[in-house]
Image 1 (tube, rainbow, N blue to C red):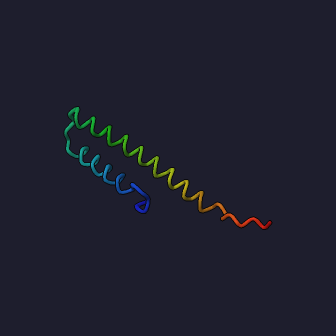
Image 2: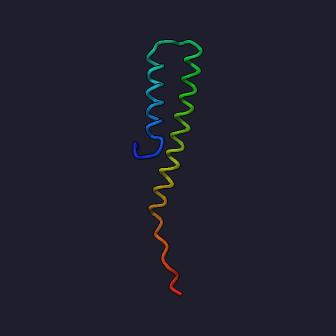
Image 3: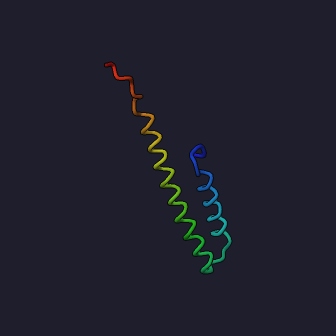
Length: 69
């Protein structure tokens, strides 16, 4: 997955989320940060999935040939 655009961003966000979860601080600010990170991860995962689907679909379409007329 690291060859896709923004894949590193997803991994960085997951690492940040893990850091916040392991910090043991259950204050409201940390909860808001965790919620934000979860939303961003979901958005990036969805974008990467769309890119992957488009790329795999493009590779399965046969190339256009010249019009034989």
